[in-house]
Image (cartoon, rainbow, N blue to C red; front, side):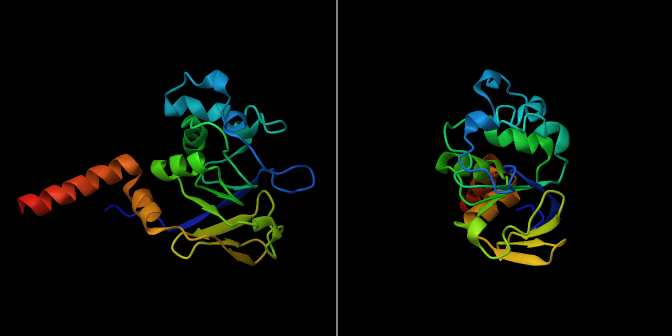
Length: 190
């Protein structure tokens, strides 16, 4: 299995209201509007990320490759549209950290190999509001932690599971399935 980095360093992009509180209940229509669902080329999806989220319509111009998004509760609730995950991959976003994710969104992100981590009550964890856009952070996928290198704060997140790590390392569920199939074929034929 190919090995992808388990230490992710990047800049925080906080998706928050004017008070600095992460926005809750951002649904897939706000992430990637249904007017753009005909777009199937990953390279064309990025400019539409958060195009329907008030105050973030220019997100794709501000986010940088390698950024790590900090998000509120129930991120990605709504439909099963894959573009709501792929638009962040297209922009080079490294990982998503939220209080919680919509169930279908979580599965789509894991299947795509996009690291997502959660902590129920993240905003209530001591130090959680010691994150601001532009801070430098490090995510340790093996230990399920996020460390704010700018402000010397470390928070433990919900575990990044073994299957999630295997799919991430393979580069997505499709590649993971091919790898598992090849290993089984080798065992049977070997």
